[in-house]
Length: 139
Length: 259
Image (cartoon, rainbow over all chains, first blue to last red):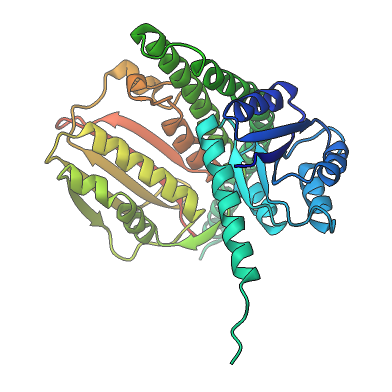
């Protein structure tokens, strides 16, 4: 099976690198990391990942702005995004949902939780794509 | 009405207004304080949760590289994960506590809010086979409260009672009207259980932050301090005491009635 490509955009360098290490250790993922929002958007366009893990508090721009940039960009709009944050509050979750993040996770997360969520989002995306691509019945 | 009566009436009205203003002033001060705590809690949360997230990822990584069949290695990894979870819970509870910075007040019937709160804990009451006796005075005035926050208070207090009362025990909830000296209408809510009661030293510290007698059960001691903060923000009063006539705890909450 081809490796899943994941982009992590998180200013916590140690966290991003630890998640990369853990995901790549399963041998199912190829991971890139970016620590700034603008760099994340640029890499997303070049790397074309299957999924993006996006932190909310970034140094150069708010994670929600990055989310908006990615979802409004023709090249990256269909990439599923999981928002990762250290903050837990419903308004934040709501704001993320309204801007079309596929999922929302609160740190700290175990590797198992993270992998399960990534697989769930990617599987869901495959099913949605299959439904969309299904040929219409001709009467 | 004589001139003296007229004057006394005016003085009474003035005193009543001053008392209400003081209550409102306290509520505003409390709300301001909670706003600062909320901002602090969010900053703290971010600064603590990120390192916890790194440690958890690190522990997960290392646990794939060590021999987990070795019981001491396995339990060490388990202890580390438990410690991370515990620290995360402390932050989570603190965030919940700090989020009570603003009240959404509405005039509601306290009896109704109490009944709705009891529905939320019905499962726990049934599991412990506890009897709930309700004694509500008829014709009570409405209270101006944040319904969700007072529900949080009631659920918290009833769950505490559930833990304290032996199986088959009893919880009595009483709601009545009372008038204080300045004739501000108030509604009094009492929750009594027939558990073993509390040591006097523990009672004195029950509302202190991080005070708990149930730390071994994962409790971090923010439950009652949250309850007290919510009541304070309503300009109300709360008292916790051992019952004199029999075993058990009695909690008294006084809330302002809609004037």
